Image 1 (cartoon, helix red, strand yellow):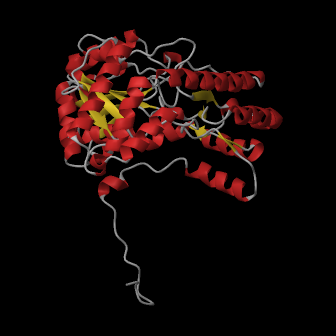
Image 2: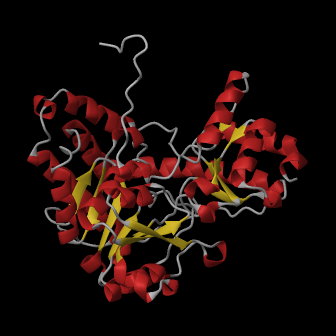
Length: 401
């Protein structure tokens, strides 16, 4: 029953591990966004990285049929998990020319965020160091904190192609490091890694006995004929590495929550053991539909890439016409650009809402090295992208002061 009148509300203190998590740095932008909407402003939201395109009809129909199957109303069956893992292994072999064992080197995850978020819990002890790029997808740091680890930030600098300089990691840090997180193609910078970088990363991990984790969620969102390589194509990678792949961006299945980890069998087994104590795997109907996606999704992906490429060219072209120095990304559906005039990223993103009705993500929300940048997303229609360009041009000089 509710507390009586005059009775003080009971306050429940949160665990120390939650207190150590960083504040949500997009809160000010969200506040400005809500205020603008309350005033009746029509916003173009380029801040969110959530595909607006529909999941292919064939995959949706497969889900419908699978959802009617009684076996999928229970915990996921071993057969469904094995079928998905086999499809993932075959997809990986076709895509990268690397053979993997679906029984020991592939693990379904409830979206790559879940897999990445749980990975440090399986391998990091309190006080262990985890090497994390900066700027970066925030889950790498949050997962490290929740596991009791210590984040060591590796700066991603524009002059280095937003690749970490592993030679700058000192001996003491190397000795304490347990995991090195990578993310290519990169969120938020849209940078890509070549095989030479992956080769050096594998050598670094082997030399220092460090687990290498590559978040490859955007590996299939690439343009102009560019094909993203896999970390696991490099010699020695299967001794130290695991790579996470997502169906979210490739097949517009963000809400379905399904992906897979692939790599070193011991690392896969460790994550599997942790997950068996926390979750009950992906919904069987989703596994069935995701298996269909991996087997038949090629034609759909080509269409998706044409759409994103058109949006990219419209936005990049419009920004360049305004005099902004913008790099056209080879992969991901993000544009990462330096804030003009040396303004702070939160202030500038707020000004974009007020002056142009355009929502973006301030770079500092992805880490200290993201300050001075903003991220724009291509996940809204071509008409909206053109509208954003017109609004930014109209706002003009107000945005550069």
